[in-house]
Image 1 (cartoon, rainbow, N blue to C red):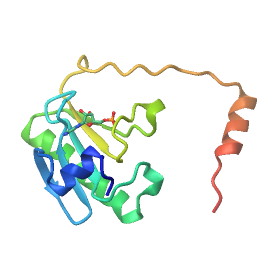
Image 2: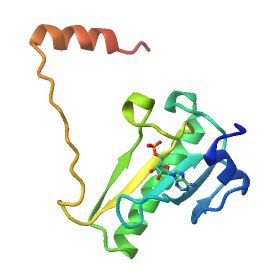
Image 3: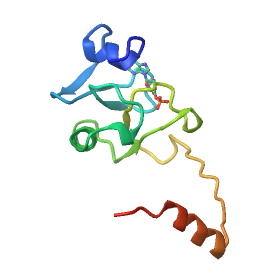
Image 4: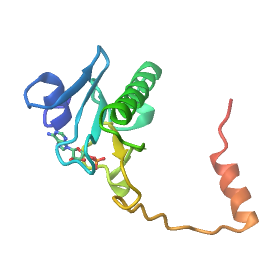
Length: 137
Ligand code: AMP
């Protein structure tokens, strides 16, 4: 637990939330500032900032609960799809430094504009990047 972490406080019950699901490992609740109706967050109860710091069990549970929340938004809110988002690091927009997966139900194409700035790489650059990122084992 981290003393001044808002999600740790929610996990401990020191701050309120609109709880959707709770298990031994994870908690799911509505985002207080929803991008769309039903925008939810799924967090591991244990404080960790980055995906790599979660155990395999926590990763599995966070994303299976995210999938279940998205399914509920399809069947109960008439959503037509969902975005699953993780912002990791300030540069990527992570404001709360306690790992969380966003589940954003989608109802129409217009609501959210996700701008992806394409960076075209040469064949050589693609090979070099792939070499650097290739995982062992
Ligand atoms: P991120 O930018 O990925 O760190 O997203 C943090 C998210 O947490 C934002 O979408 C906030 O609206 C949400 N948030 C912050 N405080 C609370 C809170 N007390 N209850 C629910 N959601 C929160």
